[in-house]
Length: 511
Ligand code: KIV
Ligand code: ZN
Image (cartoon, helix red, strand yellow):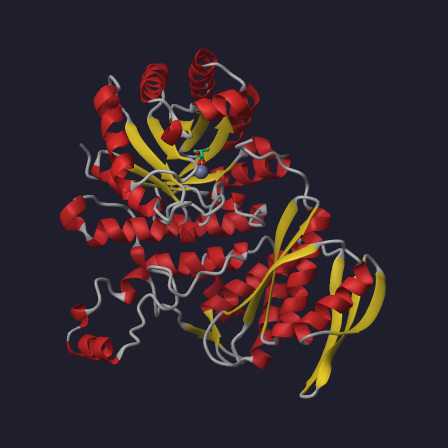
């Protein structure tokens, strides 16, 4: 059995299914370029049949990415598979990932199909996919609750039809490590010709066991793990890429497997995904949380100073911490900025876009004299954000706080070409600002989440704000960054409103 572990990143597909994490084509391109630098083997770019926008995003990645296989998800229907096939056509290495549910509960209540019909459709989907690429992956959705004999039969037939990778998903995050490893072991033992394909695992984190289950599957023969940066994904998320990779690497004595991942790119990738999706990373998150390498207790600090390995099993710098370089300052010119963007893999569609970013950089440098890579990433995210056709735009904001009196905010904003203003009081300056915006727009939305994170350290750092709004079943995350967190909050709120205003409806792959 091979000692190579294939890392299949689904941040841009399953990760995108997190509430409000839908990404534009430009956002996906930035993340995909970073995933390529990170060294993932497969990038699941999206679900091409979901909408014309999703198709275009998958197609763009297929055109641009050369260092990883670009994959599109497709339900086991002719239209989905053909859309996926067309979208990945330009790829140097392209894969179609087709799936159908195999559990009684899904077949009966969701698909309303019999076992025979599911089996026939699975085989047919693989055959349609082979018309476009010989790299075809098949997933048995809800494998965790599927009948073992039926799973064996389905996998046997799709191998005969030509599938090269067989994915075993714990779609609902129901398994526990022992059972999941055992399921993988039995499948490999029972499916004829199992040695001719790559076995893959795809685990959700509903019981907090996605990484443990994935690793158990690996110990029992899986040679591909499907995972996401920061564990993003449907509901409680997927197995986190950084945890899987670092577990395999740190415990090489147990796994004896290699990945192509350049671990020093893990933290930069995590930060990029967090800033683009608006999903902050919890401070105590393994590997990429702000406290992951911080020693608080005196005894631990003393031990680490005497001999690092007393309390550290990995080195922070090996996963990309402390890599944030002091990039630029107020006196830096266009060339210096251009070079730094190039080093960060950030490209601009036109010189005009670069000049806009340069102007924003200058504005920021007036308020913050040390500009780090993370600031530049946020600045570009903001460029992308403002390009999300700004129906609602912040013109100016004044917020006043004073002990003993209610904070008040005055917002001037434009809707289309007309300017409006409103002044409101609130529990705090952010609350007053949101109320003033709502007085103008009466959006009818519900605020589901408000969070602020500092992008770098220090009190002059930019605050990165995420605002999650929902309306009529649709959920969006808006983001804004500024050294003034009230301004960042207003930008984030308006960004969310713009997304609700612009976003086209898209199909969900698992409905
Ligand atoms: O969780 C799941 O089952 C999936 C499949 C589409 C692979 O995401
Ligand atoms: Zn999934």
